[in-house]
Image (cartoon, rainbow, N blue to C red):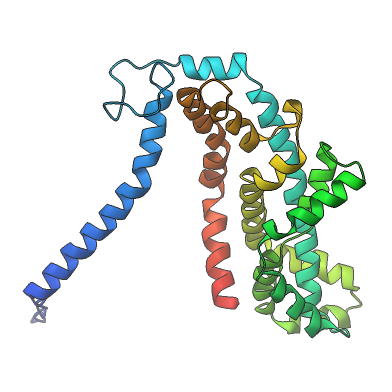
Length: 288
């Protein structure tokens, strides 16, 4: 029995133009990678250096010390700032997630009067930056004696996000309406449809929304600096500012150490939730 001859497939050699384009693309990518990584390495190197100067003669100091980390933990209110930020971020993220999920479900699967106007209103809200509301918020906070109250700051940030609602709505639009109709035939209520069908199917996107809200709240500075004045109420962002706005001198090395420690929770969250982030964003982009 004769064996069949395997057909050899020859790959065409890259042209000189394709080779140049490939190397140019690689160089551009590496340039952007270095631009992103260099500030991170510089901050880490500064946090391990002695003294208070940010700029070093070398990228990493010749003598590495962890004194800056020890001083930040022992001699400042860093742990209090961290605790405040964690409390605020968890509460705001959970509340915003709940509001965004219910609003997205209503706009996606329910039909009611004013639905189109509500969607248009959400779209208009995204056109204006939140910083525009600071004068009105400060005026109201002063008149209502809400300055320097953490619960007032939390309530302000819990207002929800139009972007989150739009992102979730686009995802829920891709869930077949036949599932909803079948559940209604079986006697399911609106709450049953939301809690037993939409929520499990939107788990990945819910993780994305929670993480995005957590990050934006964790790094929020404008409203925190405007409303929270007591050092015991500082968040991570306002606490970090105190290192570089000292009346006598800015302590850049301790600032760098505090910044490195402040970034650890976000790195851990990304490491454990990157699977859900990738699946949620890909599914949201396809279904939306």
